[in-house]
Length: 196
Image 1 (cartoon, rainbow, N blue to C red):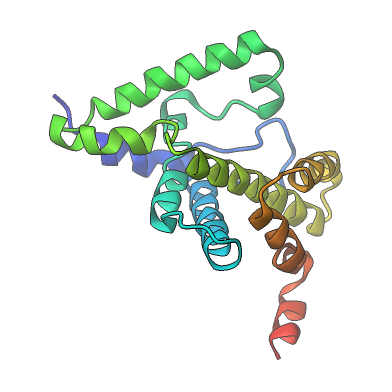
Image 2 (image 1 turned 90 degrees about the vertical axis):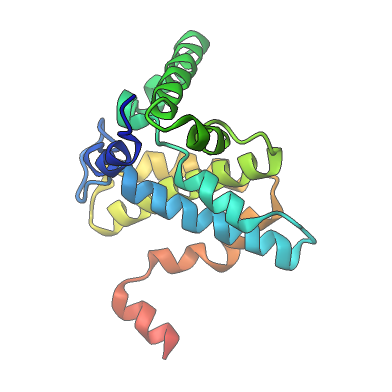
């Protein structure tokens, strides 16, 4: 048995995202996973603080941190291709499941048992919904950053993702959009001025 799990995880930085788009600043799945974890944790905290939630924010952050781990083996399939039709979507889900099992096979059985719920789709629907929302927020923030750099390649994606976020029924997502999302439009100097 090879115990290559953590060595494979360290290679997440070599898997780039947004491969169909011209990027002014490339993003890899390690960077993306960190941002999704930060955002998912924030959404969980907002839920607990303002909307009467009792979700384990740490569990949400961990699920988000590993949500794209299987892409170490599969690569990042662009969203327009992944969801082009149900047959492709279902085939990709099957490929993801095989990749997740292969990653788990890189751990001793005792550890694999503990990592299985982290590497696979969260069973807790609230955790899954928060991670999915954070994933969308991260994608939208990437679009905003690209547009701030003068890259209009991301304009249509930004509009589409923002509309999806606005339709999200989770109150913590709408709270984040209203209170935290506007700051991502600011330059560093503008951020410093608002913290005055």
